[in-house]
Image (spheres, rainbow, N blue to C red):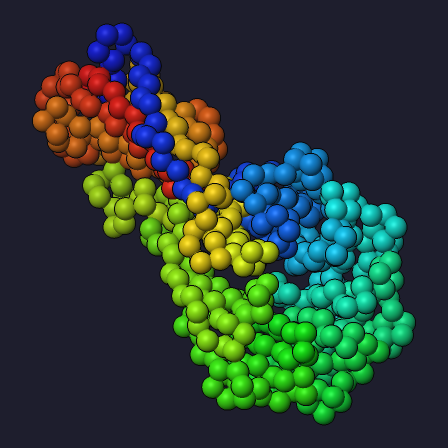
Length: 542
């Protein structure tokens, strides 16, 4: 039987520690560990919704197995605010019978006094559309469930939904509107400030916009009513309801504006003068308070957008920001945020395309045979979920960073992720950037057997300790620089683990001919914010 063993130069099994490579940081990006972050695939879990806070930070929502909705607050510097909830996290239990056994957050809204309204998926509605109901929970500004709201802190108005979208809005008088569907009808429900259905709105608190269809976005109108986006058949439509839930005849004579029959639409943004902006089909479209195209905006009411399928956000200075984030699909080094800032008249005043500085990725196959078809350490596992405008006009891009490995759906490790941008749409150097990767490499004295046929491959073991999840590359070379063993693997958590490097064909050949081969071992680790650490050791292979 062929045996592979590492021998440290002075003492068998001695530990060799190399300092992390420099003080590499990733300003403008940060990741946050989530409970239950390691699970079987295929879906990533990170920050699904959030709201900007006055200091430039945000309150963000995700879900955790067995804990329902979880909210986390970070400061404008990207640090967890431990004065929120318990050590920076607040848990909200929401009844749910979804397949994943947990609700999902849809939207977080902030009231003027700092309290939070959190919208999440609840239980499915029997004998209806089969979509989950929206459940609203109210939290105090410091993250405690407000038991005076609705029924024990929660309200369930009877509106179903089927999309992750901005389905709710705080109205000008403090009421809360939600749009979705009820028994196949496009509906809007309005809750009073104490969480009960407003019986003066529509029919006992629920108004029907269309006999079929689905609402997916809402915004408050200056008149006290609500502006909603939805889909009827294949058409996206824009409608405005009065404070009493009737079609607002002052807006497009009370009839919906048909926007398109395909594509993704974002918005609406409703301005102080009652005009409404929506984004879709490659342009921002503005309608006046009467529901007519605003000919003073862009070109005849249309401002082309140099960003595809973006999210439309209102900035604090009267203009708007469009943010689109490309997902790298965990196989490339490129995950890009494309951002465009428009002035109040629809002219582009800032345009940026920024590579997001995240790591992560998938476990490559065949790496032990040579160079895989992509650079494993340069992968980017960022999965975007949305964007928020900060009070100074900057932007927070939200999502998750994932590392994935294993057969079938595999095992995924996720952390919530944020990338922060200044008002000039550059990565914010004051956000995050305080953590760098660290790596420890130990050469153990243990034998590893060959494959069952005794010929096809053999592996050799090292022990590594990392500062967190990420991607690891091992290379074992002879003193003349020839590659004898290699492996690229994913690391799911901080701590110590054993890793095997597979001998190359040359390594197997040399091991059969020689009993002791001097080798250089090099391990490189890249964490979730893209910082790297390298550890090296010399040993003898036999």
